[in-house]
Image: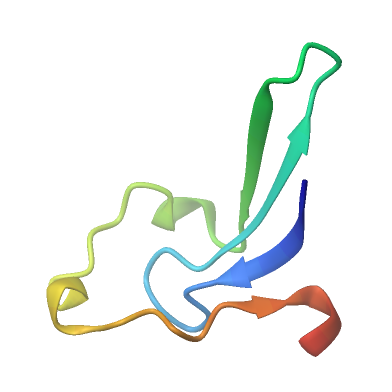
Length: 60
C-alpha cells in the first residue's frame, strides 16, 4: 500500500512507518522508533511546526 518512509526526522517522535494490506483487505500500519523512550514523548512545540519533511527510505 504505502512504502516505508521516515516521518518527523530529527524531531521528538521520529519514526519509520509503513502500511500493508492483509489478505482480508485491512490496512495495517507498522512503526519503528529509533529511540523507544520517545514512543509516547510529547513535543511541547509540535503545534508550531508543519511536517512537510517526510522522506522515503530511498531519499536517506
